[in-house]
Length: 267
Image 1 (cartoon, rainbow, N blue to C red):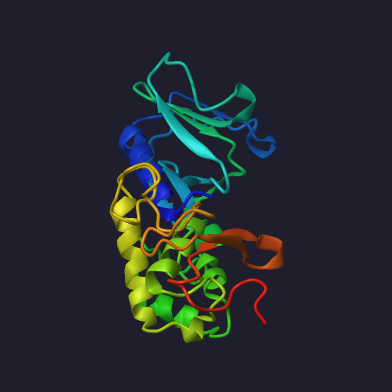
Image 2: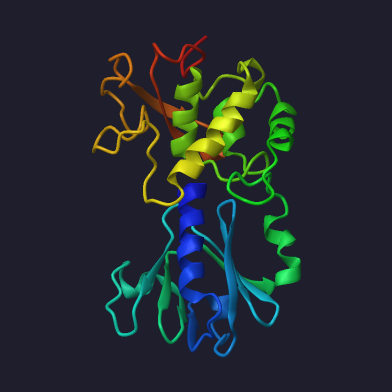
């Protein structure tokens, strides 16, 4: 699933390409919007809220999309060949005189009044990359469930918006705990929240998620995706498993030496 920095970068690029320009042609390929034509409306802005994309239009409407696991938006020039996937995966086309925005594999695509955006994003916690960021409020939300496993708490967008599974593994490594450590046992949780914001800000203007400071292939992450390979810090083989609620299990990676604490099979 794309992380908050990926969604922020997508919104930034869409905004630069579309904002201030009238739509000349639109094609929304979901049943509920199949007859909707947005041509003639001007794009006011494209904004990210957590992992949600909000394309706000001049007539008081917002096109809301969510990328979930493998959705994406691509930009092309007029007449340029689309390369984001086969045609049957296209869910949205927004075309201006200069650019064409194509949304692929979008599991969420809906049109709603801009004044009612809170119905789809109002439940989110403070956005790590948004103007509403409030570290103290995020900490209060996390601390409200001290027994909750850290990985699960960080993935809950109601606590803080923008952290995905890559950052869960990397944040846990950098703070020396496992994803199964109860939040209430994390030392100096303020540092965890500060670090989360720092990592997303460092990566929001480039593709990928570099958490080590090393952009060389195979060295961009401390533990994520490195099961069985040596820990970049101590050389111990990185372990892999699953974490999260039963209905939302995610891949987990950790170094058993650098990250003492509970793990699958303990107890």
